[in-house]
Image 1 (tube, protein in one colour):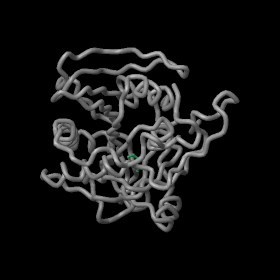
Image 2 (image 1 turned 60 degrees about the vertical axis):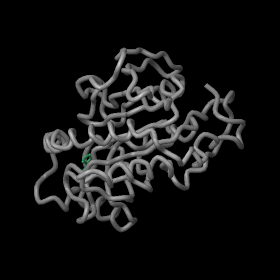
Image 3 (image 1 turned 90 degrees about the horizontal axis):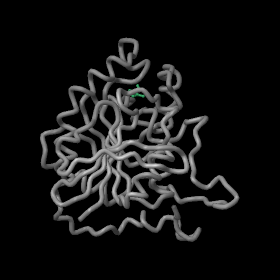
Image 4 (image 1 turned 30 degrees about the horizontal axis):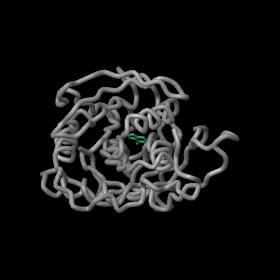
Length: 266
Ligand code: HPA
């Protein structure tokens, strides 16, 4: 039995698929986390909606530490995250899925570590490759069997938000090598690595980024574009969860990412 979590971004949520569906409220040192859990194809699966019920929590206010702590306390080993993004890359169009392989962090005010108390001490986790190499290959192999338009690599630029970017910022991100821009993958991916869990992010392009899009950006546009991709995302998540034939074992090293610092402890 695998122990998998899905952190669903804007609009992605599919609890009906769970056998023995249960709603949980998990207490962590950072606050409480609501999630749903159950079994799919012999695997324990937990869903968290990143922006909360009714999409009320903005990206800079998401309680990332509580979410990742809660999943760790449930014994989760694999996190499948979805994110809505704007595109800086003309080849990555609305509706395309991107299995990101790199990120650039432009957040400003978020607590991005579990290691900020004297008790925990100082730790500098290796983050050269922010996404789990094994989970990325698994997702790519599911996408190859589907009709979904997707890209095997992409660099995600994480901004602070909640405002959208300026055209000049987007131009700069493009010069720096960014393909996509979103507001949620940091610190979520960082904390997952510190907590020694495998983490993969599948971004859904909802719009061309500021200054590339011919029209001003709007949240409504993002939500409407997501709604069109949700059924594809749910198909992908389902295929990812149900495929238990993996022979790769977990050779990525995510589960021992903190060994230099004595391992991650709850
Ligand atoms: N910028 C930042 N975040 C986003 C965008 C965007 O253009 N689209 C969806 N999320």
